[in-house]
Image 1 (cartoon, one colour):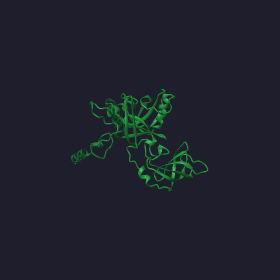
Image 2 (cartoon, helix red, strand yellow):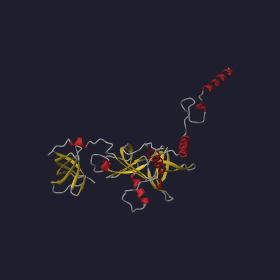
Image 3 (cartoon, one colour):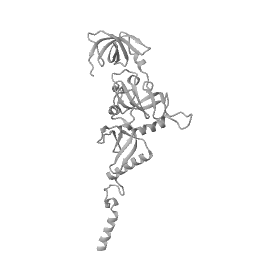
Image 4 (cartoon, helix red, strand yellow):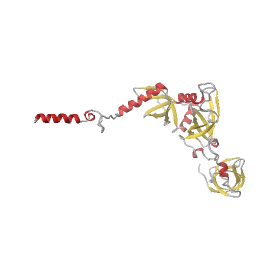
Length: 322
């Protein structure tokens, strides 16, 4: 009887899954393995080590701007759960045309970087510390590598991947009322709002948001070297011109509602609710309207050449908010 019990006990032990007998995580599937949080972190850290070794371009969202105890001002992003810091000098922010030429460079860089929060940025890892699991990276290295890849060709006479006339995707990295800042394959470009869309806008933020992708046409590339280059683009050329079709919705003496998008030397520029751009040189009102006001508009002329409706502002419907 004792021998039967002993045999039965041995058979039972053989049928117990090895996963149950191990000291690791108890899994439902026999012989399966679940990584511990520590093992997962080690695997992700190993990916960063490989990325540093191969100088692979990584992408993360710009999450913050900080001043460290050492006095460094850095941009902060995250990749695979690890905090990545990028010194402001390594952000390669284009300062041309920012209107702050007499201000300190670091302040100019920081101001623009603040407007870029939430945008995707590329970077190459410069240094890693195994003990603290801290990472220092460079956006400049990544941008220069992309310029080398897309704006130059290895073989003489061969056309590069990016050239004037080509329609390409661009990242929206900052938006101001009159200007949209784009990153076009390693080059930062500031584009006027009027060159980003056929319809007139009060604020470019109405149509464009940080982090989205837009199609643009490359108009010109000026390149003295990989580090010294300028690119001009516009989004209007890459989109269908609906202004001419929308203009057919207008008729002379027709009355419409519109928003004043700008005022310049007594001339009012508007976007009518029917999708038509309009210009008024006068208004029949006791008090003059302002930018962002909603007004009534009477069409006196259809200007096919400039694809706008011309007319008179007849009344104020609602004051706009700044």
